[in-house]
Amino acid sequence: MLAVPFTRVHSISLTPELSRAKREAIASLDLGQYVVAHLIVDRTAENLWRVNGETPLPVLSDGTLGVIYGTQSEGEPNAKTDVFSLLVHGPAARRLHMKPHDEAVAEMTAALSKLWPGFKSHVREPYLYSHHPAAVAVWPPGRSPLDAKAQALFEPEDGVYFAGTG
Image 1: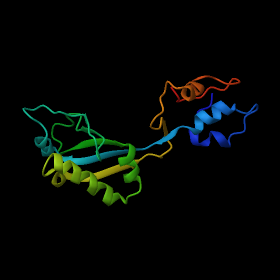
Image 2: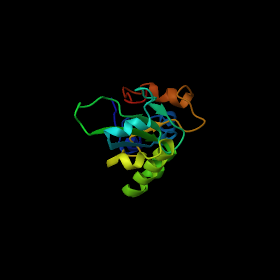
Image 3: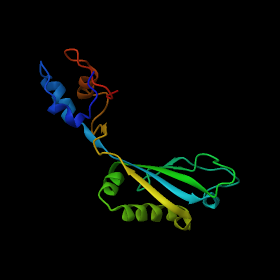
Image 4: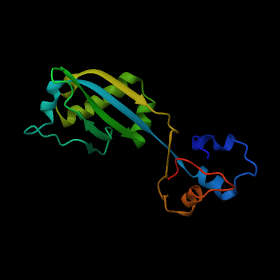
């Protein structure tokens, strides 16, 4: 069982070597990019997006914010704050990886304030977690998990099975 980041497979000496088809399949993968954001917000922030006590969240956005989870639990009844969560992915995450923390937070809170005016004033503490850009393999544009290269990853070779490819 081989369970290492796909970007490191080439540095492992296997006997016999992986076939050319398997090496090409690995080389054809792209880097998945993710940033997890947890914004500690005043509990009153929920008034911005709740309608009749109901929340429309989570929702997949088409820009900087990725998946907007919002606040997902009721938390402690007497708490004054809650955790507002987002999962930023793809090109937006790639941009955030390269920005200083304060700039990344400013970009996210500005985008949230466009959806819910005043949102930024409710943020007490921002926490961003940039995951290693090679932590997740993705199929690049034009590829499919059903194509021949993908199938090469699903098949064992000389007793070697790849974990995390299915």
